Length: 77
Image (cartoon, helix red, strand yellow):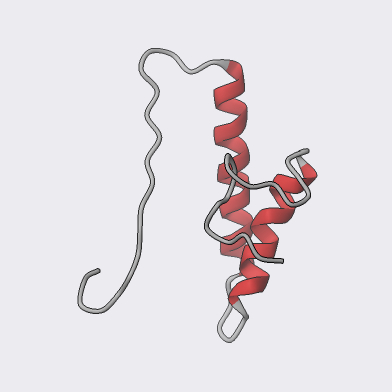
């Protein structure tokens, strides 16, 4: 917590060369993040931003209702 703001940050590090599957998943997460950024608008509910990111991941075959590993930050419908 910094000045009343709660946040977290995740980092993934590959030692050596990433496998093709690791690159695929990294690119999928990057696409989900881009979808979330595109959905983020003033007064937009955060649920819609989350849904945009999750749709990318579910459309890639992870879901529906996937949990860890995945996006454990929001596990409600």
